[in-house]
Image (tube, rainbow, N blue to C red; front, side):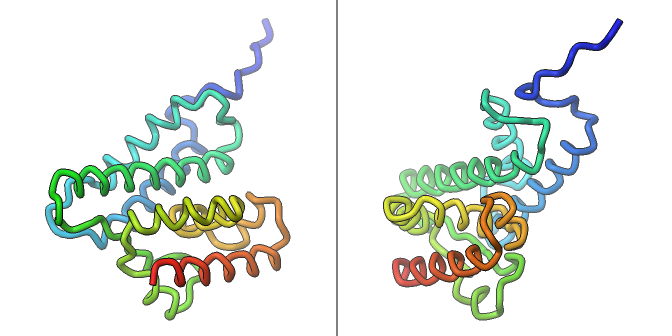
Length: 183
């Protein structure tokens, strides 16, 4: 009897090597984002990944057959979780320290970029990305893929379906816009 085809919208078994690699990538991204946080930070990398993973499982239109298409959505989920966590912490402690991100290890970043991006206020970044989204939603996706997923520009170009040179120009434009907006 022939095996019926798997529904591509249903997650693969946990033992699937492609999903294990996706989980490892998500874990590395989460660890990178949280390593610059203050001591005693209540959100740990594993918790961030698990929360993002649970949110991914709720996505009905997600094509689990191609894990490389899941990573950008996972990065977006982690962005939302980090921002929600920073907002909750700020609400709970008016005047308290606002969540900061450490992007010193973003792939392909220059030393100047690492210095300029280190310690970004996540809430200010979120507000800036919302404003940028009103101008160009592709630039926001690019920032999510570079900053929140830490993907190299070659992979970002593949995911966005853009030529590498266009991605280079767009990344430069997004960085310049964010630097200006974030002071």
